[in-house]
Image (cartoon, helix red, strand yellow):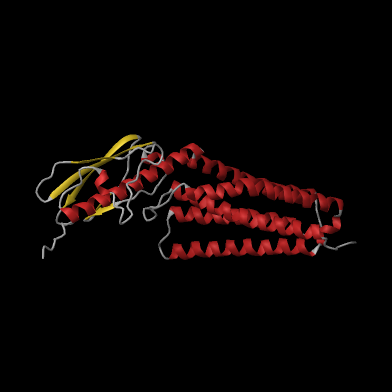
Length: 313
């Protein structure tokens, strides 16, 4: 019997271990994000589809790579059965069993602790179950993979868990693609987010102009300030200027309007998409918009944004 570990064995098992751990981490991250989108938390107002893009990208590459590495390792074991007992394989299996087992135990402890504290929610339960399921599939797969005995029943059971893991990955990736949408949609979302950010920047420059001079600028050109370095932004896609106009001024207030042409409706981008906000007293005015030309009317309250007193001495 030859239990010698060759450099090929070592690097195959180490590579498979690293790929497995990173892929499982990406899968958990993806599933938790999907649950967050399905059951949004009012305290989590800043979820965007970008939280799905990275784990989906990782899984698309890492899962096929993992199955290729595992296939090569299995072929080596079939040709040389003694490789079942090489030290790097045993260490890999028991390390994985330890980590996944500890993860499941900590997961259950967290669930029980949260339940006893009366803070349990459906969203939290789903996340705990998702982590337990993913870790459990990996745990049972490697539990069945240890030892020399390879009866048909054991191999079939192991394959069931291998395919179960693949099904979970495929469902998660497909769900991620559905939420994220096409690259064209993501590009449109980014353009719209930039437009909203540009309008917020212009808005505060208008407010600053009002506070310094006591009247609104007639055009956006008046906001340009080479000393402070402020350059008036333009539409990131068309390079056209944003629309601005000063509206009627009443006692103590000033009103203006900002307009932009958006690619998509804000509610079509993502659950909890981030848009810049301005605070006026206790209310929050966001930049939610429809597809196409959308205008935002803003009132400047002089009691909140007073005009600065100019010293004539």
